[in-house]
Image 1 (tube, helix red, strand yellow):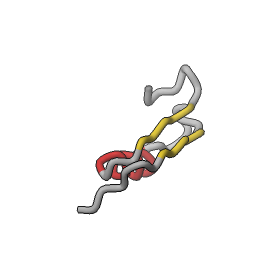
Image 2: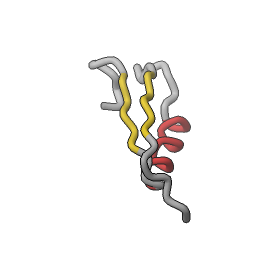
Image 3: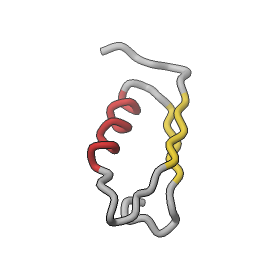
Image 4: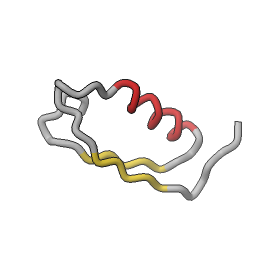
Length: 49
């Protein structure tokens, strides 16, 4: 599988309980496995911290 190095992604999203985060999270996990540097910004009381 090819590696994606040097790419950085900033995600600004709402991960409070009423938002379905799993499909989006799977995308970020896959990108991280490819070597992408991912930072996620959400609310401090989000359920998925």
